[in-house]
Amino acid sequence: MSTASRIFGLVITLAAGTLLSFQARAEPAVEPERAELGWTRYAPNYQEATLEQVVDEFREKTVDALFVNWPALRTLEITKEETVTLQSGPIPGRLVLLVALRSLEPADIGPLDRITLKETDGVLEVNLFREVMPGGEARVYDIRDLARDQAEFPQDRPTEQIIQIITESVGFPEEWESQRSTVKALNGNLIIKTTAQNHRQVESVLDNLRKQS
Image (tube, rainbow, N blue to C red):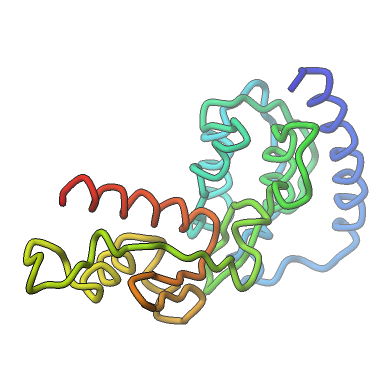
């Protein structure tokens, strides 16, 4: 993405941020519980600051319970080392973070690849829309080569063990416990419903198991 495109997008976003800042000054002080969720206002003053520095200041000034899905951001070629220039009066921390992140987005991405903030169980998450959409996506994984008949192929793992490996190493334990992500075995296949990022991790886990067999 060209520098001109990023600057143009940033100017538009900052214009919206200025309006929000003006409205915010007329509002009552942020309630403590809202401040804990990243709503504390501060004045960003970034001149070629790295994205990691922006994230660190957000954590320092608002809430430490912040999860950034860096692997998902890397699919947009956004890394911790990307630099951001942003100056503004006091605005909510969430807006600071979102403006900084979206200034780095490619100009031609689709709506599902836009960066968003999602609050879950007291944790603020930086992710892509496609990663946090409810329900996830169901995919079928053929594991017949990994879970053959135990009597004939004792070196193979039982299906239950493969499922356990997946649920213990993919995503977060809470996802599987709360049934936001699910896995079912059927006729030598695993039917897994989860996020796009988790599906990539499932593929990696199964590839590693095949290399070990």
